Image 1 (cartoon, rainbow, N blue to C red):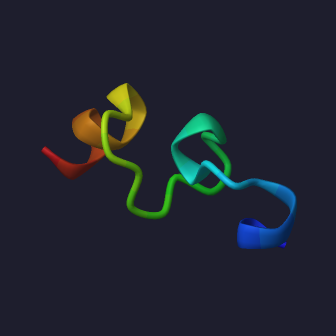
Image 2: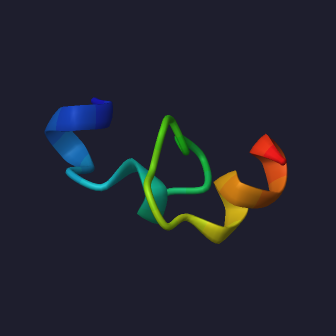
Amino acid sequence: MEGAAAPVAGDRPDLGLGAPGSPREAVAGA
């Protein structure tokens, strides 16, 4: 579903699995 439904995981805070330029992931990763 991740790659099929959402081409950009960074756009989905639910997924957020390695998204370049994702503010949510940047905060969570940092």
